[in-house]
Amino acid sequence: MSTRGKQKLNLDPLFQLFEFHLFNRSYDDSDAFAKEVAEEYIAYLDSTWAHLPFHTRLNVLKDLESEAHELLVKKMYGCVATTDYQNFGKALRVKKGEELEAFDFEPPAVGEEKKGQVDK
Image 1 (cartoon, rainbow, N blue to C red):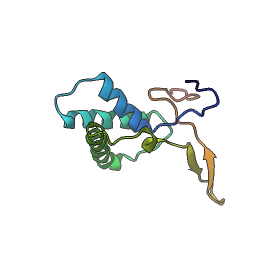
Image 2: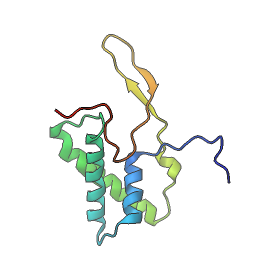
Image 3: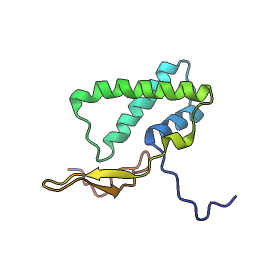
C-alpha cells in the first residue's frame, strides 16, 4: 500500500511514549509503567518550549500517571484507536493587544533537543 499523497499522522507525544514503553520495555506492575511514562512525558515537555510551573508539577505528574494507566487498560481490552490520539497541529498564539489566532505547530520528535538554543 502506497503512502504517497497521504498526510503524516501527528500523534500525541504521550501516546507515542506510551506505545514505545509498551512495546520495548517489561514491567511487573501497571503503576511502575504509568509512572515511568508520565515522568518521561514531563521530561519531554521540559525539552520543548512548554512551560510547566514548578508548583503544579506534582499534580500534572499524577494526572499523567492516571492517563497512562487508563491508556494501558484501554489497550488491554482493545479499546484504543490511534485516531483518538491524533494532534492536528493547531495551537493558539497570544500576542498582547491582539486577538487569539490559530497557527500550524509541528511538535518536535520525542527526544529531539531544542534547536537554536545556546547553553550559557
